[in-house]
Length: 552
Image (cartoon, rainbow, N blue to C red; front, top):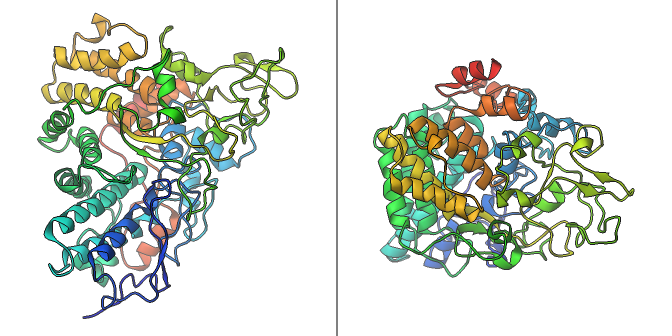
């Protein structure tokens, strides 16, 4: 039966984006049917590129005219930094602020209010990513259309390549949804896109099933995505390998053989193509400056343009600094010297902060904490430091200045946002080896971790951290926190180590209300109307034990 492509969006506009600076322009096709689109190789490529829209750094996007706007996954205002760093031990609970109460609750890892999230309206104070489950169906439809492409329209090689790219985008979409909500109902079989029974089956799949779907997409991508692209931010085969490595590390405890797959991905990545960035007096601090975008350590990144305003039709941008800088910080200090905020001035009120107790876990000479500002001079002529935290408005914790404002282009800056770095790969390799063997780390695993520490100005891990698998993993979790803060990984790491509640109890002084964010009420009610029971909450094996230890 012939049907119109994207029946859910019978409008005339198909927006294409990639997260690159200005590499992809919107295209208007008119009424789209399978008779007039896609019919050429260029059409199929453009169709695939629509799967990149959730990975561009603009304020919002919309793939469905009827579903309202969504936050892209990597926009700081509502994406992975809010989901996985704010809610972790990295950030202290807000004391006060210009933002709404829901943001404050996220900083406490309090997810009780998330059940009231609405579907159609984008609420900046309460990001709702659940509508993205429908976007997975959209991606599956794109995948099915590419799979059915005839040889007269596209070469077999190109077909396989863009199919792999689309599956990588879909796998990443499902991966992020899994780590926000736990397993969620999604359509992954193109034959089910128009199947009413499948579309109405609004129940959570098993953890094994959902993780397998993600694995299958990442594996296909790791084998078939092009090695490189002319456009900087399109996903490459190495990024697919990193995502497969992450996924296998997260799920290897219940999926046999997956730790070995993670090690296999490391072997494929470890070709000398990537290395730690070591330039400058403090290489870690220098690595995130605009001048060092796409340096030797970066495997994948959102390429950002300081001239962008955040409009969907423009390039990606990075507003992190505006969301991290206090709204009363001065450009010059009391002696007239320029402050770190000299170029852009004050921010919007410190949506993001660094918990003092997390900061205190850094070793004394760790260069990585130099990207964290522990005191600043205010426009009112005062120095605010550790003693003022909790007593002064907008000073809930230290300033995370990992992506500094270097151009007078507020609120948008040009620092690229990293999606995958070699340092993360080294740390994942060491962890995968120890999780697979259950034994103390090998010298190669130790070398990987110590290489990351050396770049941070530190010595090797002490012997007390290497005598057993348990001791090593404890040290490795801390090392990952110090290396990867505000890169959208921390809550996922804490859950993998069964330390989400324990670390939050230490750092925030509060216990999380849930391990994963509950599904909104409206989705649960809609499932009931279809005769289905959609479980609102989900937690993994080990959550009760984590909570019990945190409560002691």
